[in-house]
Amino acid sequence: MDGYVDQLLRSDATSPPPAGDTDQARGELTRLFTSAFRSGGNFKPADRTYVAQVVARRTGLSQADAEKRVNDVITDAKTSLDNARKAAAQLAFWMVASLLVGAFSASIAAAEAGGIRDRNWATDTTEPKAVTPVATR
Image (cartoon, rainbow, N blue to C red; front, side, top):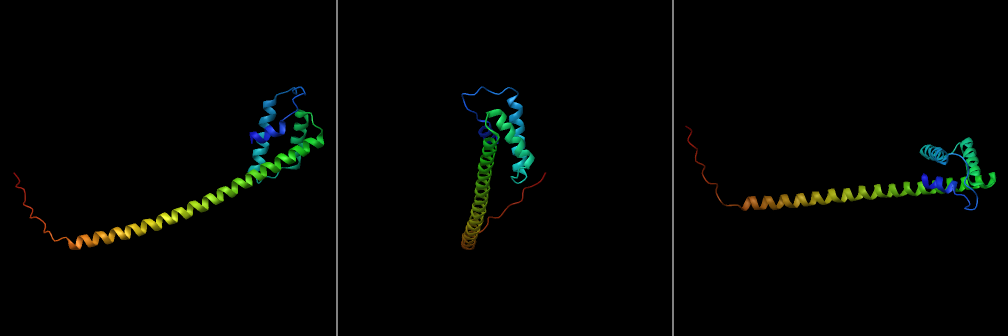
């Protein structure tokens, strides 16, 4: 979320930096973004307005431009999260498929090895040697 907060708070290089604790604002925006996307990506209207106000104050943008920037960043974050979800689902599918192929291959190999063992066992004509008991004292 830090990258998205950086996009929100990016300001014009010619304007002086705003007064106040920027780390506190960054932390607060990061927590707002994290909690909103953890709960499905829906920002509460009050949170969205507050984020736009913080962006307007920190960057010197008008309120309308700040709201547009907030909407663009939220849309970008939702798109990235959706792409990550799709990639995770595809990864899970292919991992399950590879596990099934591995299990099938292992069962074929075990059946073949069992057949080889049975053939070799049946053709073994050597007789076991007699075991002599050891005397006990």
